[in-house]
Length: 155
Image 1 (cartoon, rainbow, N blue to C red):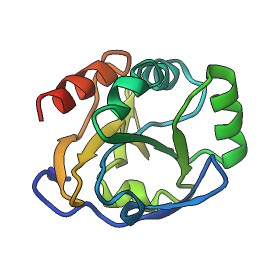
Image 2 (image 1 turned 60 degrees about the vertical axis):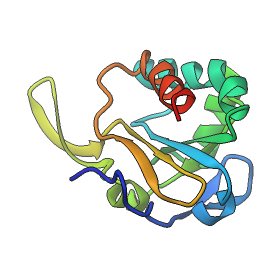
Image 3 (image 1 turned 180 degrees about the vertical axis):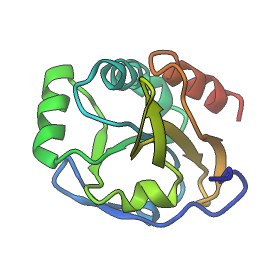
Image 4 (image 1 turned 180 degrees about the horizontal axis):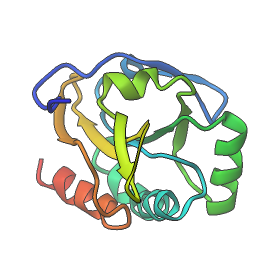
């Protein structure tokens, strides 16, 4: 998929780990970091989530909200949040509809095997609902949250 940068962020409505329904329009006036990850409580996804956790206070001070998105159930999200004390909402996208609209679902190769799945990626949506940054493929999950913070600090 091509980059979403400069385009209006695709609308979504998904259930969140906080028991509420979340839509992009709920965040008007704030920046939103939406990061897509394959699976709760797996090594790379845990490192990425904990990285965002450790930077949440700084990111929040930049008028920015972090949302994580995977196909996992809300029950799985609850366990993941509890185990690692994650201070942000995780959205459940069981049918990968949001992931598809954001280019975070598609063919990937792991250990020489091709399959369909979540492509680890991130977008930053500005206060007006426009995508200002799109990492279409995140190579190092553990380093990515710091790169996102540095980008936000440069805005």
